Image 1: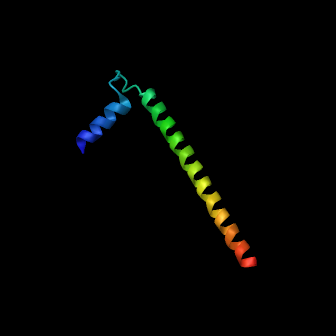
Image 2: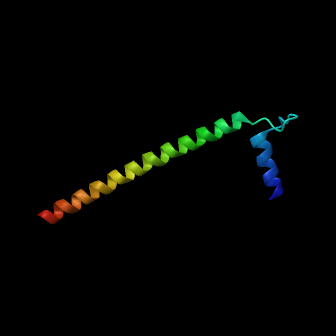
Image 3: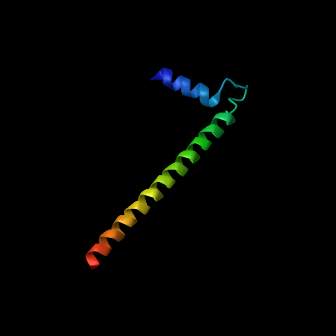
Length: 67
């Protein structure tokens, strides 16, 4: 577990250590933000597509019951 923590910490912070502390790895943060945004768009698209299919099924069921 400690190796995983060290690997994640070195990826996130990077090797940029200054006298005051550390310099944040903005490139890694930007990549992470882009990945999160892409995943959220994909999930939103799939959920809307699924909802549309579900609405169509309900419309067919309602039409059959009215006849």
